[in-house]
Image (tube, rainbow, N blue to C red):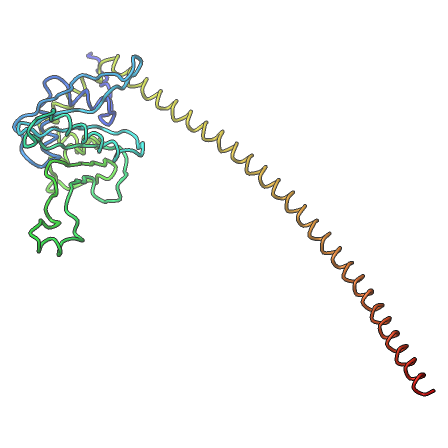
Amino acid sequence: MAQKTTKIPRLPLTDDYIFKRVFAFEGNESVLKDLLEAILRKNIKNVTIKNPEIIPYEREDKRGLLDIKAETDDGTVLDIEMQMEDKKNIEERGTLYLANMITSQLQVGDDYTTLKKSIVIFITNYNFLKRNSYHSIGKIKFDKTLKEEYVDMGYKTEDEEASKYIEFHYIELPKYKKKTQSEFTKLDQWMCVFTNRKGEMMLAEKENKEIKKAMNTLDYISSDPKERERHNSVIMDEYNRLTSEQNFFEAGKEERKKERSNRNRKRNVEEKIINWFNMWNYKTIKRRSRKDKRINIKTKKKRVFKTASFYYFLFKKLTL
């Protein structure tokens, strides 16, 4: 009786390392081309991957430089990256990527007209934009508030791009919602793969040979014990980092609680001292007020007596 072979579970394609291993895999240029066509909504003849290798930041680094740099047949340069966690810097990161892509195209003395379009694509495993769509495209356009003034002067309106050389694409995987078969696009097929929707993913593999090729590559990588060990090690490192950050946060929280308690205690003591001083001051003023009142009564009596004595003496003198 033949033994059943246990199918090795696939490593997640949303792992940034696995993402680059699949899409920058030797011979998988057509897979990357298919994904780019789905995102950019245009036909691409061919794609050249500029950095297929994974260069570590440090000797012990298990992740390395995980963005994919590519160039299409029309000279468009692209930077594609999978983002696993929200580090609150994706806009700054994308801007820096674009700046490097643009400046690296030209050398001193080169003609500016040779500049090619630069596109940054982020596929994120989290939401960060306040938009309903899972696919957002960012371009530089003219300011609509200046429309009337500048149209009269012959300038472009806000509906036109201020620069055709810059473009951002943000794909937020958690925002993707299931669609009917008739609504399915090529990008929807890839979204089913990234979000691991098994039923739809099997259908996408049947309909799209490049997705099937990507899944075969993923199966091959997943079957490698070293790759699985590396993935588990990265997950454990990430867990330890998050745990360490949580412990640090909890320790800081406890420290802040103690500081707050000490401040409240000090404030209570200060308030008691102030209240005691105010009460003492009030009683002192009250005592002085009563004393001054008694002095004023005595003074008035003396004045009345002196005045009466004077008039009595004067009356005596006049009646003699």
